[in-house]
Length: 332
Image (spheres, rainbow, N blue to C red):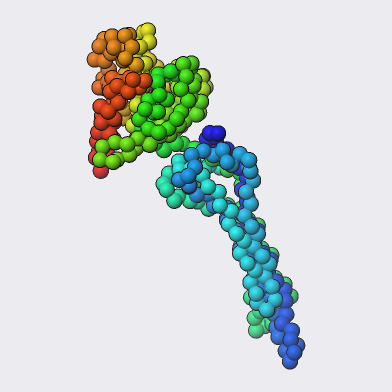
């Protein structure tokens, strides 16, 4: 099950208390203070895992506590440090404070991690307080409390290409044809209720990640339809692929403008992302007719395909890989 938002409670381990002890053994009845320090509490650490693509696993355990440090012991024995609590999340997870909503860490890279709640320091044993003028200290330091907080995790999928468009434009079918992903396909609106990722192979054994995102409608940025909860996933993509059903009555240009309006309303940065336009369902009579009528009215090149019939997919992929390569060159 896909889950892209969750709030959890985390607490670092408390530090162990320092020990009050005096050395006693045969022939050394007054050996002096020998209480050891307490161990440090464990940290709560969030790190990325390449094997995860949802936050669903965190919904069952909303509380995460690191182990407390052990108390010090006599004979100058230090307490054992507490074990860290490791929380694994997908790449693209944004960590923020649930109270003031400040971003703590954006985990975008493989191997990224963040100490989200530090463990408390261990307390000093009485042996550390001994001085020439205070040779028998009968006190020790308590361990510090570990950090405790509520944090909000928000997943923004990282993909090279984001397939966007109105419901039933054919995005899921297209992802099925160009990758091994198996998103749900049906002949009713909002078939896709959650994003799907697929690995797409290109020329020279290059691969990219494509994301099929739930269909947008007018007013999505205000919560209409499936709302704006999936627009955040488009923010991570390098290239937008507008899939338009050219077989429908009415102007495909109007469908394109509807999506552009929602992108602009949601984020100016998102609206500036590079894009390609894909004219789907040209195998149908109205699809071919509308392509001839409207393709020249778009500011960008329109790539004609039929995802169902697997027509035009190779040419479309070459154009997408070329555009991504151009974006890479422009970034240097």
